[in-house]
Length: 336
Picture 1 (cartoon, rainbow, N blue to C red):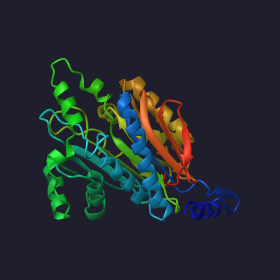
Picture 2: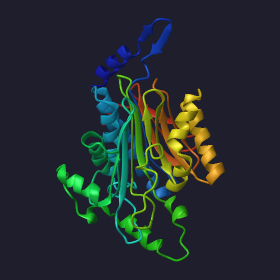
Picture 3: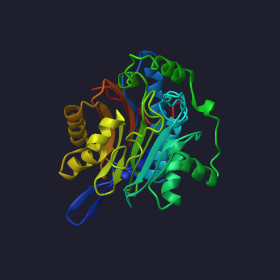
Picture 4: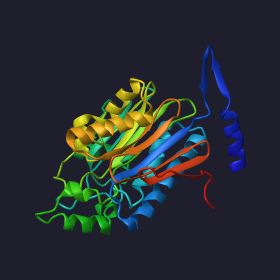
């Protein structure tokens, strides 16, 4: 199977000549995912890294089969939502009342179409509901009960809230009820928001981001994730970004669009990501991380926090890391 994929890759590594320009198609398709920025406890770090590697492989298999960038990022984020190790879908953190309220966004770089949901309850995969908002309505974002009504109309089954709550999330909720608890600081001990960016073989770009939000947040609190330009942005002309970190800080600097602004000014995906994160840290003391991709398939996984679980797949090669400066590679062929 991998030999067949290797032959496909050899074909992709040809150069397409258009006039005077040499446009390399060797870099496509590509996907990059993250599993949240912050400080991941040692006992949970291994499972976090394994989860993002699995999700990157899952998204890449969609691209390899000729699927769209949108299909790929939704697949990758769905896998992370289904993994209780992350603060999205199953495993979401709890609000002050001990309940789950989730946010998600998708964006299509070809048309700038986007869909999002906020403060949604009893849905296993908010990212899939966000895509339905994009595909089936004229709106960009549905919230709370309106999002739930739309989910029911679309035939998405309602799941028991208990199925989304882990023992770990409940333990952290109780711990953060203490009067002297710092939810922002404590958030950094939990794997955070999950997200993905991709460019498919056609050169179309997409992003998806999903989260359970901030630990012990007020009921109805909405962070950066469902806000276009903050919790994600994708534009075929520039690139795509999916961030993670303290939502309020990300919103204040409109982080995703800020990074793409730097890319419009000629900065690489990596340079632009670093500039955006540095500005957020300096201006509003916010820490976080991003996965970023440009139309040619150049990608970056950058963060200002202590850790961010990330993985990317390109040319049958899986890249991944957790700490700053860490970059491992292995074959993207499914492990036996």
